Amino acid sequence: MKSTLIVPLILFALPANADSPRTADGRPDLSGTYDIATLTPLERPEAYGGNLFLAPEEAQKLVAETRAFIAEDAQQSDPNREAPPAGGDGSTGAAGNVGGYNAFWVDPGNDRFMIDGKFRTSIIFDPVNGRLPTLTPVGQQ
Image 1 (spheres, rainbow, N blue to C red):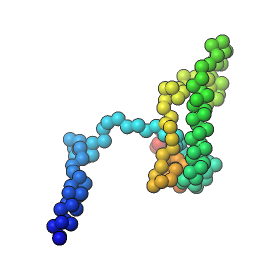
Image 2 (image 1 turned 60 degrees about the horizontal axis):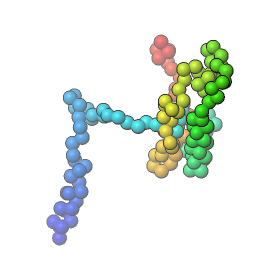
Image 3 (image 1 turned 60 degrees about the vertical axis):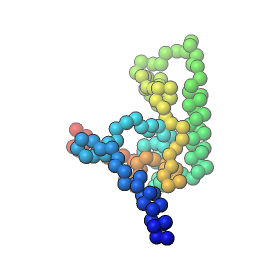
Image 4 (image 1 turned 45 degrees about the horizontal axis):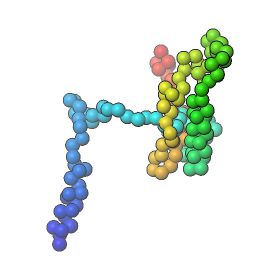
């Protein structure tokens, strides 16, 4: 009876003990191609304050709004439109940031990511405000 229970447990545990690829200096080899596209912003918008997570409905709404914006942005532009002003117009789009890229060139992702079944308000979670900390004087150099 004991061997009947032990054999399946050993077989189940074997993959967990498998060696993962290592670099020449023994560190885990994380090289490769990764898809890091996500609609979750790096920094938490100030409107969320200290909230780490979004309600599922709010996450779905934000995804739908972003997808609609991307679809609208992908429409053909008027070939007879005026050129943007020299240096850009100050907006966050391609005309304001001359040389900026749109979703054709930079994949913003299709969804917000989840951790433990919850949608994050930002990728950064520490410090607690979810925003990049102020650079130290040395970091500003």
